[in-house]
Length: 208
Image (cartoon, rainbow, N blue to C red):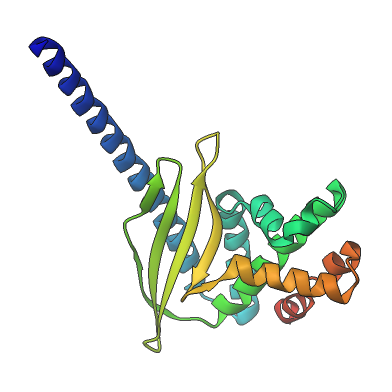
């Protein structure tokens, strides 16, 4: 009985240690992923040249970074909410593409004229080995501080994906969903119109 208890205790300690090690590895992988992606964007923001070339560079890097990092399909599904089940497969794909395009365009517009003095990525907070959040504190050139929280989840293939963003307490996923529902009400649930007009203000602004 004593040997059995010692053996059981050893097994429990080993399993706990293995879980801790796996969690530490996941935290390190996630931290490096977010930090590395952020550094790519920061480097693009410091590119020399006129406003047009800088904008083109930033947009190119954002597309390169966000495409593999952000789960646009899951985000678009969450934004559509109850309307997702009503949409055709073509409408779902179209909205995912439109959402991605408008987000990249909006972020490009913001970053072209934004100065970052300091960027600090906090240690990831994992709710489980497969999902959690990463917090980031951004200090602007004017001294303003922005707190960003990325909700993340690991795909079955082992890739970390951003599922939502909270900026200074504002849930962007929920904000987008409210916008989608408002548009759906305005167009009597005509999803083609909702999708075709989605982000018109952002598209116009990013084109200028």
